Length: 173
Image 1 (cartoon, one colour):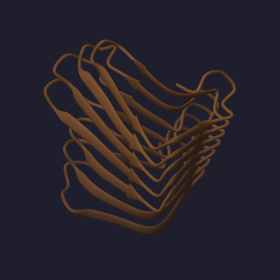
Image 2 (image 1 turned 120 degrees about the horizontal axis):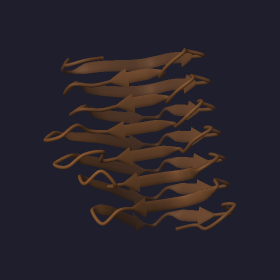
Image 3 (image 1 turned 45 degrees about the vertical axis):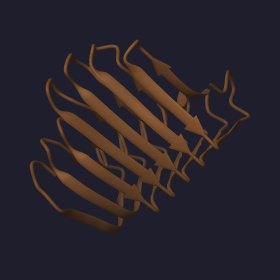
């Protein structure tokens, strides 16, 4: 989905695709409800370059990279909101928010979401490219990942409240 507004994806399964299960870019605004995105070569849902995506009541599992991958381009803001969803068994991480260049803003919000059995991180926030990246996480279960939750880079913010972070292979936070 590129440069479109008010797109709704509901009661849909995307499985076994050679790239991302759902790719959203170039300022598109998408609401996703009851999606099952699994066993795709890349991410279950990928968003970039000013995309605004809301994911509710969905399962993003066993993808070749991440459950959700969000990044941005210089001068734009990319935002993802997760609610009551499951990101599990992905070969990378459950949720990745990555500001890859200066003047980039990537925001994430996760509520009542399970991030479990992901190889790397339950969630990972990085501002390594000089932009800002933030995640506000509340009332989530983060378990059995390589690392529970992590923020890297001086312009990364991770706000954690009322979460259960337990049983990860390495550290929780």
